[in-house]
Image (cartoon, rainbow, N blue to C red; front, side, top):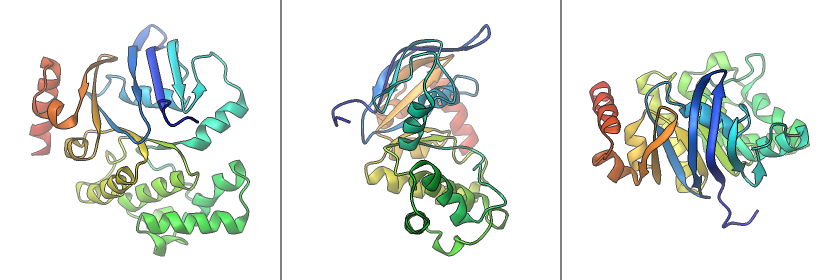
Length: 253
């Protein structure tokens, strides 16, 4: 993969569910090493856009190329999907850990099945990334023995075990109690500083302002405003973005 190729390329990307048009022509590029925060009100299409990026949702029009794989076609082979998801990790709101498996077994499963790693190699990789997210001591715990913040850090470590080139985060802190949010955002900030390409759907405006290299405001399925986070969030041009930020400031005060 050439370094100068965008990690993600969208051109007039469209998605609908029946008659409901959710994405109405998304255009843009996400470059390697960028951290792009996608913000907007509920129902604006943020999570749908993210799910299109790893083909959890197919698109209905336009062009979408992710990590060199063209996702614009109606049908994608199983082999290409496996190639895509091996290099494009995703961290969900609800952790999605297997409750009957220990933390380390949750982390080792995909590398063994998808990357054909040996048991020894997968466990070494798992322990490395558990240490990276500050949870080495939880390797043999089960998900129901962890706090919400710990579960999400395990989910991030699980994604890192696949050694992805891009990680998608779908509101990774929205299911957490407020006092647990910081520990997850710190892990994400460390990843950003190491150069990981990240696309983050978030309501955490401080994270967007301080960590993201670019912010993208979606409204009614379109990109209404984007740019440098400090500029866009401090001096929004769109009336809708002004109203959105005003609501968010009231909620987060």
